[in-house]
Length: 113
Image (cartoon, rainbow, N blue to C red):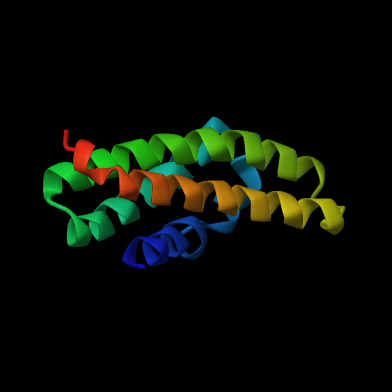
């Protein structure tokens, strides 16, 4: 549950308007968003795992978040004026993120760097 809270904080609460708008067209803004997200995930992961496992968990989820957002933000940007398509894309984006967090949590015993 703590890591889902971290996800919400990193992916929504700490995502600025500029990040949200520009991450689909600018790698700089996407990278800034993912870096912010990854820092939040690491802080919370250290509350759940040893620092070595927290580091592995964070690195993998940071990379996965970057890959997912690279594609979903570009797709969502094409449909921002069509809410019936835009919001399901955002929902699917979140489903993928949660699945990644869950999968890496289940496999956390092999994540120590």
